[in-house]
Amino acid sequence: MTSGEERYQEFAPPAALRPFVRVIWTYAAPDPSPTVQRIAPDGCPELVFDLGAPYAEQGEDGAFRLQPPALFAGQMTCPLAMKPTGPIELVSVRFEPDGARDFLGRPLVEATDRRLDMVERLIGFDPPPGDPTGQAEAFVAWLTRQKQHGDWTIDPIVRPEIDEAAAERPAPPRSSGAQRALQRRFADRVGVSPRLLRSVFRFRRVFDHAAQPDGEAQSWLEAGLRPAISTNRRWPAISGASWAAPPRNGPGSSTPWPEP
Image (cartoon, rainbow, N blue to C red):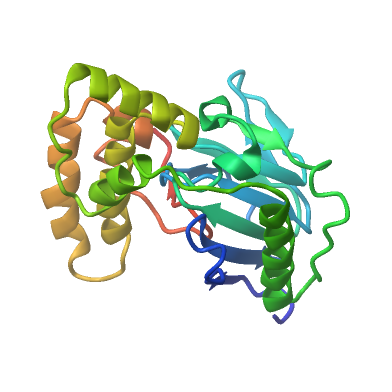
């Protein structure tokens, strides 16, 4: 990476981690714009390690505070406002929606809309600066050791439900008791309800297509975004934006959202 050049790369996890980890990605920007970005929900928790200057996150009081250099970001139900404070270089693990439960060691609902400090957990983790491949390999090795020392599993009830949601297939009919049991499982393994996760998936599909620089962007906005706004009561919370301000592209796991 030459001086001043922005860089984003993704790396597939090895087979042993694939049920739990969707992708490992790296991002660097030596001279980032100090503007505020809104990061939209994408349905996946993440483990983020900063090698550069940490981001500042906006709290409920409107003030920006530095994030810890190592953090776990749980499921998001609304956009996150953040801004860089200096040169950026980070490596991140994007888990499957239900893949982080045993890594975290606590119900995922306890991390929903929160960024948990992982500095102590990652003591000794030392990915090489300026080396995206080496950074990804370092995280793979670290996660593999974590998995070997734990008992990582996938819930056989939750994962098929997530797969159905990702494929836009309708949920099977369930009794009220079975639905409540599924919601409890989702609170533990995912952090949000099955219905809310489906809403997040749908918005991400629409926005990711709409953000592409091709002639189909406007048709995707008209076909997907406008009906979603008019029919889905979760739209304001998930998007934090209006129809008049479609999303923009951005690095990493999520798309920076426009100001509402």
